[in-house]
Image (tube, rainbow, N blue to C red; front, side):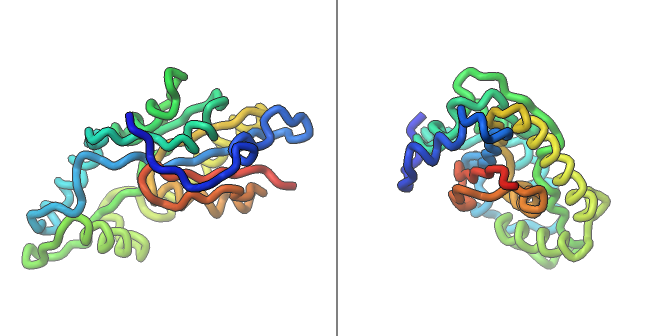
Length: 216
């Protein structure tokens, strides 16, 4: 797989505190999945009901077969991690496998994306999937769940997910998660509350990653 372009970051920073016995915890490295084969920007325009079906098929979609892959930075940061976690969605699993390079990949539904139920609008309203994503996320944040997981429930899941990652990092080894943009975002406040500082912020694009280290 061709690798994504690198932004400058020192090798020592990527290596982190591994091997430093004074640091009880390993690092937590959280990556976003690669680019899916299903394109949010392609038409046709969809009704709310059609978007529900589109999202269901997106959740089962693999990565786009265009030669994409993890950056050298991401591979360097994760090369010694014994814990490689991911959700149960194909796009996340394939991302984790590309990072793992043969190591075991642990799939867990606790890491799936927060749902995107569209509001109950009439068929008059038609938008591209990308626009429905925004509309549905805003609607969800204001309390609409459409019978799916609510924001309150997703926040609780994010706390439980962070607990799982911290328990792995408590071994003194790095732990990696390849998951989803919004759910990764939902874990940040809990990591901060638990005393974890982001020491590398790679943004939110496909294959991007953040590194968190425990601070007293």
